[in-house]
Image (cartoon, rainbow, N blue to C red; front, side):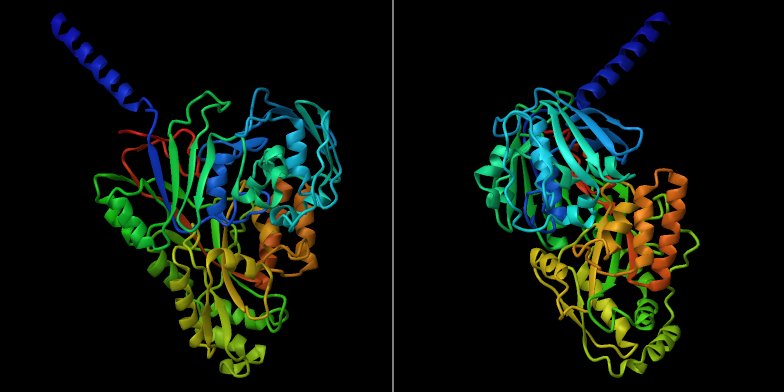
Length: 537
């Protein structure tokens, strides 16, 4: 009997040892990540799109970071921080022994330079070596839309590894904001070599270094062998980010083994992935919103609420979610996800009601669409977490509007041009598709950044509402979360009443991967973190 028990324990020990050996990370290999489009640029201060940020996520780091699979804050390039009792002074103690990919040291001056260069009028202080911050070639959109010039008064390097941010006002989401991509720390030396070309030659402190960029084809990163964080990876030798615009082609490339991870497959391909023994399905509830907005810089959209409501009630959002998202999304009532605090459960959402829509059209002065003329409906050219197929959704929306007597012409461009032209609010744009994946888990990051047109000309909707703007200011300057929750609930009610945008859907994010890809985790912010990913050969 004793011998049998011993054999059982030996077998159990063997199984645990085998499992442990199988789970041990392996060094080396090249991982190919298939995505829907190319990056616009790789300077995190100036980009706004996910295809740029998912590469930046692996090149750069910020003072604070977000924990795996959550938006809980954790130390990044700052080991610790202190906040003054009045909430207006943030002191960061920095890590020592960190170097940029070009071999230059990470220190307080690098932080002051990286963040200070986004200030309209830099109010900064360096320690030792003085850096001259060059003038901006273009406004840093995130910085401007988040009113950071109204928030940060000065940035000071107190010593080689201590930085102080002095705020002009209390800013409740400030610390969470400092973990976002726009606040990544860059090498001042690399930037000053050629400021205009830095977006194509990025240098940070992250686990992977920039190696090559072939436009509209691939970006290649290589392992940073001198990475400061010795816990875990980086394990991979190379990461190749391939641009494969067609969802079906990208999924086929995954099935045939030419790529390891497939971003944004067609919803219909998910069932095929489930049946494939060689694939995993990493899944994450989407912290996102896909929406349709009006061009609020021109009439009749700017002032005709009845016309906006007519369109809101004419679009069959459930049909779009059922037929195009195919089980990977839910109809949106608020333009923030239901998992986020501040969500207003009492907002009913715009029901699909063609008769009601026709009543609003008559009230708007365009009965049966008469007098409105042809309008343009800008539709996204690339898949994003919040919008799997912009062109198909545009066609569905145009068909719905036709029932109101509205003729909508679908317009699209390549992704970089689409973003650039849309930001300029051109006269030839009437309606446009866009969306958002949250950066930090704070409602401010949706509601202020996306819809408060009075805060900045960089806010893409350019809806101007004094009442809404005041809600956003109160939300930023109120520390108590219960009070902030009520502020955002009221703001969401106002958005519903005034209909500046039409929330379409929140998606579930599923990115199939080969089973040999180990420890790949989706993140609520849409970040692609490859530091601890490895290949089981």
